[in-house]
Each structure stands twice: as structure tokens, then as C-alpha cells.
Image (cartoon, rainbow, N blue to C red; front, side):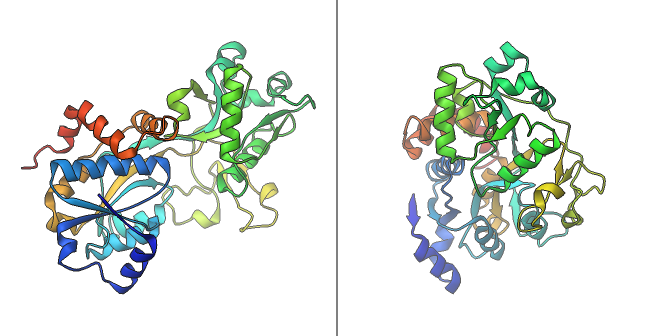
Length: 340
């Protein structure tokens, strides 16, 4: 596998220089840097190189640039993993979905990612905290009071994340903000706190998502919330999930200076479907790779385990990928079914 530098790639994409004969012989993959993508990329790369005989190059682009490049079909980007829906609904509507340009394909077997509010299993087993509705009870809020000020604490996320603002709105909407206050620190600082609290079996309340290594290492349980039934904001009128009476009426600071008071979110995040994607042009350029990408199937537990091995055990992603492929030959063979 070869990696192309960000500067080289951005210039080459802009000038259209990655359309030479070499492009026809090489599979180019968007090279993302977050852990879930890094390990998935390593597995996909290894299969393409070791089982299908194509060289793979990682190209440092963001999701938007990668999707646009795949749509061009010139070989500048052929493959992109870790495409989250409905997070990128606009790109799906532009490049993938029926009635779009239909220049990018999505794999047939997306896996599910979730976002929500979690507690360790020992909190649920000992204190019966199973739902966000429990959080408004004074005796439950007191469980999470770590500094003795009479209010519990919870981690809604780090500063600057849109999901952190959603967490603040949920605390207001579920009426637990009076008894449980947010502590907004970096993700790394929160993970350190969780590790220390878990070791001492201290109650801890927090927002998180899967896949992530925390779920491979710890017993973490999601609190129940009402099911998502649609976005009520006018900005989502073109979304297939728009519902003027929906449970999710969320505004960000850029939308309205009074965003916190104006917003109401009284339901769970909609589950995410996480896809591998590939250029429709790959069906001619490398039909074996296109069929492989269509048939790749992953799951949250597997990807969380990969992230654990990379982030906590510090295993090299390519070594990790090779070992996993060797131990899961039947699974990998199913991805390659029908390819001569």
C-alpha cells in the first residue's frame, strides 16, 4: 500500500493529473484518519492487494472531496469507507440515491452505528437506571455527584461539537439539567475519567457512539429514549426524515443566538447506517474490486474490537488487518463470492 501526501493529492486532484495510465492499474482509496476508518481501510486494502492483486494507494482527502472525485470516475478516487448515513444525506441525494447522479455506489451490507446516553453496567444493575426519564429523579442525579456540590455531572461531549449542543438540549428537554450539570472536557480527558471511574465502580453518565473501543473493553449500556420520529426544523423540509410534528427540533448556535432555548429534542438519535462506497466507474475499471466492495459486510462489535487493538493495544493497522483476515477466512471469502 502506498500513501500519497495531502499536498500532492490536493494539487493533483485540482489539476486532473491522476488520470494517467497508472490510475487504471491502481485502486485509490480516500485516506481518513479517525480510528474506525483507519482500521477498516487497512482491512479493505489488504484484501484488495492480497486476494485481488491490485495495488492500493491512500489519498488524503475529506469525505466531500472524495465523493466528488468518485463521481468524476477518472480514477482519482475509486473507493471510500466509513460513509455515515443519515449524517451525509445531502451527499447521498447528490451522488448515490435513486434520481441522483448515481455515480457512486454504496455497499449492500451497511452496519449500524448508534449514538446515545450511556452508563456502566454496574450502575444499571445496582441502581436500576435504565431510561433517560430516571435522570430527573433527585436520588438518581445524586448518584453522579462526584464533586459534592449537590448536583450530578455528565459528559455531553467536548466543546465545539454539534452533538455536544444536542446533549445540552436533551438535558433541558428531558428535564434533568436542574439536577445534573454538564462537564465539557476533551474526549481524551473524558476517556481517562471513565477509565478511573470504571475501575472504582463509580457512577458515570455520558454521551457516546459506536463503534468505539470503549464498548469492546467495558460493559456500557445505553439508556432508553423515545424513538426518533422525524426532524421538525424548517431546515430539514427536504429531508426524507422531515416531520413538522417530529421529536427533533434542533438549532445550532450558527442558526440562532437563542438556540438552546429554542431547541427541543425528546427522542433518541436515529441509528446510523455505515457504508463502504465506490465509484460506479470501478465496475469497468476493476469489476472484481467493485463486486468485492458491494459484498463487504461489517458489524459494530468487530469494528470496535479493531479500534481497541489499534488505540489501546497499539497494534499496527496493517498487521492487525492481516491477522484478522487470516482468522476470518470464511467471512472474507463471502466478500469475494462470485469473483473469478
